[in-house]
Length: 233
Ligand code: SF4
Ligand code: SF4
Image 1: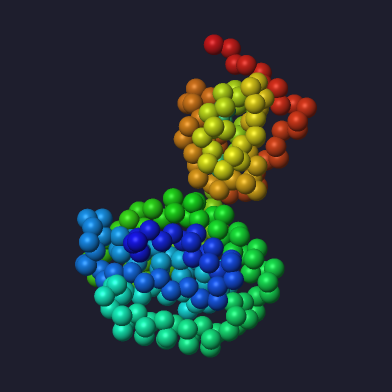
Image 2: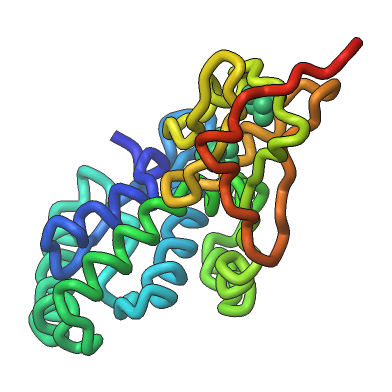
């Protein structure tokens, strides 16, 4: 319905499902029927997507955002024709990139898993409405996208502080936290999407969740040592 509804994850899903190219057609900037003007969000989101594809080793030319409204039949046909020709020139996904099926699948899966974190980390830029739509082209630099991955935080529950109140487990959007009543909670780092919700919701009187900006995450407390020692007072 709206270009602004197209999420990075939708594009990655199309590639994961075997598409060799993806084109998004959205109404022209300034011609949105609605107040939020979603096509500006689309411009920001899609330019970030292009950078992320490049980071994953996928030629960003396999993805295009085209301004074309429902009444512009000729423009739409030209878009599809030229884009199809481009994708034929590039060949099947991975062929011109030198990526085999397994490398492609794991790269796309890893990127898809990080989409919520990326959207949180870049939320301010994703909501920008720039007057000149061409300025979105340079909104995200290569260094910035590189830093997204290099500086990705991890979250850790301190077993000495966790009081097993269960708040983080209930609020984690991907069920990455294991625990029970009177059982110290632990984060499954493979499932964690680094949204930071556990840090936000852990009651201040416990402050058991830490955001780790760098370095390895301490190993989880062994099962036999997960009984909570209740704090006094
Ligand atoms: S950061 Fe915390 S709440 Fe978010 S996915 Fe990871 S464990 Fe769950
Ligand atoms: S919210 Fe904090 S105290 Fe409660 S279970 Fe999670 S880490 Fe432990």
